[in-house]
Image 1: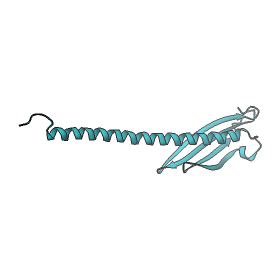
Image 2: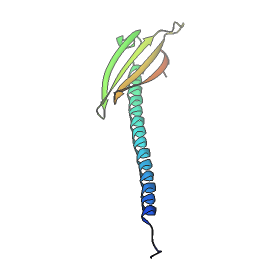
Image 3: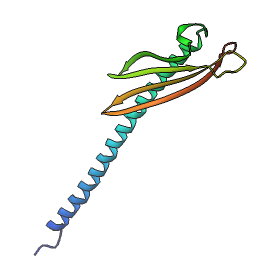
Image 4: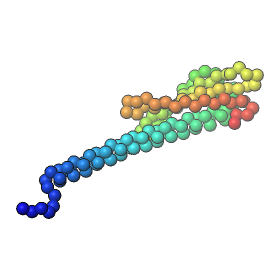
Length: 128
């Protein structure tokens, strides 16, 4: 009888342990890809929101775009995902001409709704 080498049971156990390790690595890889995808979408949404805020920052308070109320703006597309940007302008009622702008960017991915909000307050004489 030969005593060198591995038995069939040892080989089956080794293959099972190896397969479980590979399955764990694949699960971690899938979670990492999903997380990176969401981070990329969140970055795009923030960029679209900041771009709209920069446009608004350059406008005079007398324009229709900066009038008090809800405003729908454009729908931007990136990587085949539409991002909807909307904002609401309010007057805080201070003694100086001031506007509060609440901007939100929404998008849908894999039947999940996502949203980020940005809030700023501008003084007409010092919008920065």
